[in-house]
Length: 322
Image (cartoon, rainbow, N blue to C red):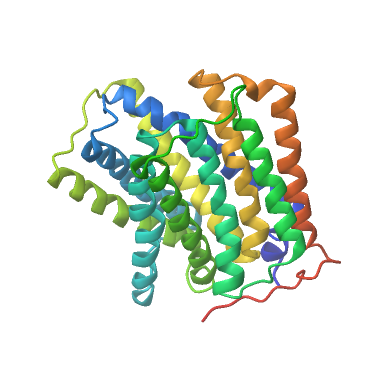
């Protein structure tokens, strides 16, 4: 095992890099809402929502390829045999997930979206354990996930509780989005053993983004309201994807899915905190309730990662490359 792989499997390194990803993804919740305002996209304007997402991910893919090529001093390109993997990831991680996500977010609140998105942690671990058999579904994972999910629900509760109304176009699409993302997480784990995760991220984003742009334009989507502020926001959102997904893919390559996926509970926590600051949707993020929520999430992460410690049952997981 080389030094790079050993470093990327150390708990503090995994935690720090995963938290960076979660902060970036958490900032996407308010950023998308702000983007709809800046680009004058109405909640019912689905084609323009898809176009907005497509432009973002096309730019994210090009940035990923450019940055990765600069760092490695060689132009990143997938092997001929890797294009099938690029296509599969493009469909699950970008096209299907974000078509559902962008439409769903436009028809529900940031609060509900945060809670529903948190279920992707459960789904990723279940798919990895039960369908792909990459790791065992131990008691520690189940308890840790329940603690983390409890924290996500708590930080999103208002004084009157959660609004119980649900629509297929809103909450339904958000739930299907999380299933697509969970599937892509396991595929990244599998494909990362065969191809550079940064290369996969760059090309799947570019391909997926172009597909979304073409579909949106065919449906009559359009973007307007280009200003320095809106362009900077678009570039930032592209960087969210370029940086976060590349780091996440590298972590998944060197670690069990469950060990990395559990940090996903921090996405909605950061989303709520940043929404409170940027959108003024709610103010419980900085209360005792918010602190308890954060504590529950952190304990959940610790419990899940304990299974992967040197004394844990899965400290020496096997890489599956079939």
